[in-house]
Length: 621
Image 1 (cartoon, rainbow, N blue to C red):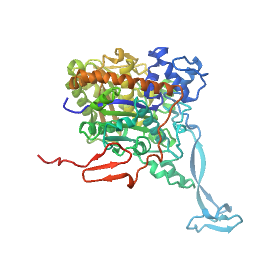
Image 2: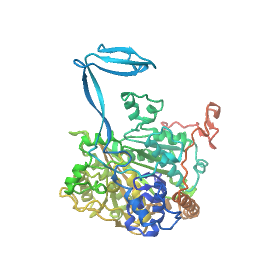
Image 3: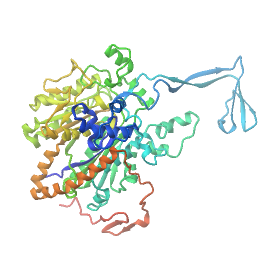
Image 4: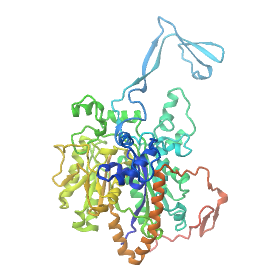
């Protein structure tokens, strides 16, 4: 094995299906293919997150049918419930003309504009108020409410607010998701973060996390822009918390206390794979031994929804009714990838993963859920519309498939499947299906299984491929590729001569043993395309055994038993409602007195190992 392999050792986050660690969000997708016993803790976990009464049900015991029904109704794609879509506040412009009738209003003196209009006549009143009489026309904004044309989305489970688990005052919704997701992935490891730091230098950690749409609510960019226009003040946090890289910054400062490499590589709807690529490149080239990769997005807001609607991208209520010839839209079936459809469904999600250099993972006994062979990224070149699809995705899918063939051989290539971008738009169903079908033809793949989990989870923009990776790893635990159950036919303009577009859950063996790899595909606005090749845990361990030998792998398996037990115990505690979010604000803070520096090394008081400054010349033969 020439390159250092990046193995996946932690899964965490939250989306409309629930908590990602313990595979609970995956299990919610395929609940009807799993046994009652396998689903028991997932229903319990969701009930506790959603604040539903379950009469003290404990681990492994069944919730009532009514409680499970309530969970189903308030998860996955459904009617928007984090604001009232029928009463969205807006304003209409109007003109007050006082040519015939005098108009006046009263306001605080301190609120007067710096430049008083010529048409205003001022009269001071008591209590520092001023009466303004208007002589002539004046433009005003009249408050009103309106109904959104789109009332469907994939909110996180109803009743769950991750901000209640830590001191989240003034945090935008997206940052709350980021803190929760990062905490969940760290808690899933089966050992403490400090145990990792004993084996690595403090600068051998990378964090790549962000949000494609930045932070967009009243505590961030929406407040920054909107509050002055509404006559309110902005606060000191709004600008800083608006930045798209804030998820990474918060994780470094308040979750893992990191001084390693950090940032976010944005690529619209392909952003997660862009960040994943950053992480595996750091591991491949020895810059990092541990990487946290993820994204958090909270775009279910009136302004964002209306922005996508006027682009013609979203499934509207009217369009869904026309599609089904009904009077009320079926919210649960709003997203219909590769079928007759009208637009995508917006979603919120937070997905985070811990990657490790393989040798460190074996040393720690970390559970290996799979590995990232590579991520391929291509732009679209010249095209007529910046939002329209181009040719770049042919390149990325073809390269990922070619690498799969190189690693697995033709027989192994036939034991792969695709987690498609699958947005549920008319344009996506034709363009992505053509790409996948042509690649399958070129590589002699017959009936290539195609999944599209946005049918359940909607489209959370930057996090989309993170949701897809979460589902892919779940397949290698429970054996079912989630089918596209929101569709009843394949559209006539979909290319699928060499594809098996899954309309039902597809069993691929115990622990998904019949699938050696999955391709995660993402297509983004602006010509951002990425495809990642993810190797199964079985394939990954086979490759590691060939490199490190049987004795090393035997030692690893012994260590991993303890790690798995710890991880399982943490998961059960969370299922029962005993969950802790990691948020270390103001703790272990370092300053200039914490640094000891020579020309050979740099020492920090909060880290066991030094940072090496005796660097070689990398450009010397």
